[in-house]
Image (cartoon, rainbow, N blue to C red; front, side, top):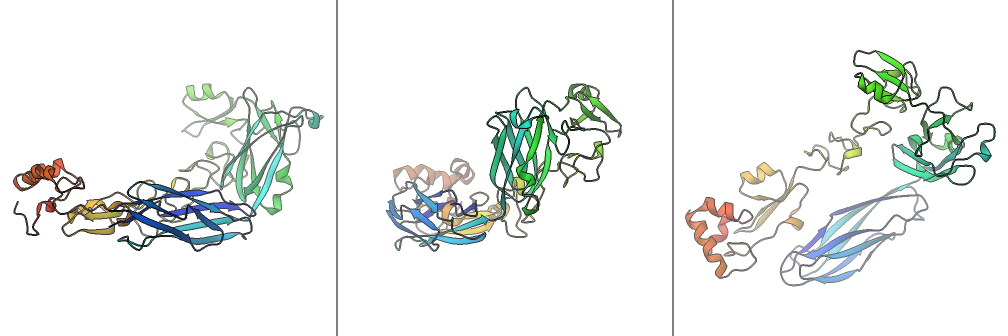
Length: 402
């Protein structure tokens, strides 16, 4: 009898308001016997899947999901993709789809130039400008004689803007040019109140010194040291152009007391680093920046990646059985076969026919030696066939005496 398997079991996507979200895909295959004749449908007008039907005898078919989201208002949208075959033993199977349309986005940009007296004619081309913050990292490269750069659809949040080009150094120009002191990066807030100023962010070429504050565990600090000299005398370099008494991000932490001197929201890098908040939206103890499963239900044990430490526990039989959401130790304690963190019975458990003692999918001559081994040396059988259940040797439905 055919059985429907699909991977992944959920899809998550996002886009800006007025945009179509990028296409995604999932796999469908027959993880049972015979031929799977499946059809695919969904319950959202902004979602379509192609092809919408197919067959599988075990091979994986890739289904492409296309999003028509340009007309959607900002917010979260949910949909369900249904995979059906009335002849399958687990018909139907579903894939949950979550779409976030982000409405708060703005243009960020400005210029990089070498001459303070006539900046419009002294732009620096080919400078990589990186904008890193709460909603990710965005980049642009300056172009034209004025060194212009712009990035569209930057979500609202706090960001650090840093220009970079081999052989050059830069100063952020807040008011005066050349600026004093000179900071290599700028901290900005992207929202409606700062829309105009965030489209005129300026940097001056050549002003950032190679030297900066050198901090020590004793609390001592020395200004104007090169990074190599600082490290060589046992210190740690705060950053080029930064001083022992400075507070460039205006967060109240002075000099070496600020482990993130250009991030007004942090004084220590934490897990996510400066410029990125250590938020934990699902409260599982793993920050969002490294959480591979950001929507874990409350109270669920998770591993270091933030994914559930539970999964499918299979019992090949007889009788065949599978339990979802068990941890590995519990599964082993009831003599099941744990299929890995995040696995489900529908996807992971493959049941073998009674008498298929070597678990190759056939009951035949090649099961004789494994049968003898199961009866005479259970420990040896478990070592030789770790994915099989010794009860498969109970060919007549009675309990094997071992």
